[in-house]
Image 1 (cartoon, helix red, strand yellow):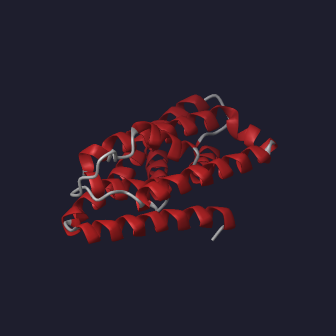
Image 2: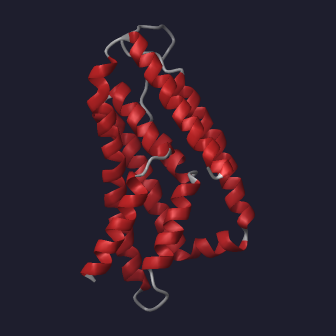
Length: 201
């Protein structure tokens, strides 16, 4: 069982730590708002991914395989939402600039849930993980619970790492022009990740 748990952790870590929309949003938020204010986004995304693992483990993956158009709908919804998030990031007002009627808020818990819940990568990784580590036998419930707990822990650590990276480079964004350039760059990177999602780049 220890070997299986270790394999689960490595699999989950590879999926959680690799660049993607959720991690880019966490980095941008960490740089602009600090690590502490990014935690709700991290928790929301982690909660959503764990829920996806549980749903897939309870049989939703069979429905997605039987009706692939659901996956396509999910992909388009994700594209629309993530492009909206990339626009918000790219046009964020620098924190040291006081602008009336502009509310500067980091991504919320709900933003984390939506960005992860609509992320096709999260569904594909969870489907792969469940098919590998959750056997179809009497012990399937135990393995699903273990895999879900590991997924929650590793996902939280992975996204938190990206948020921490953003927080670390915060000092380098002390000027208005640097903040603007960073926000535009992160918005473009998020847009590129969305485009690659559609074209399989």
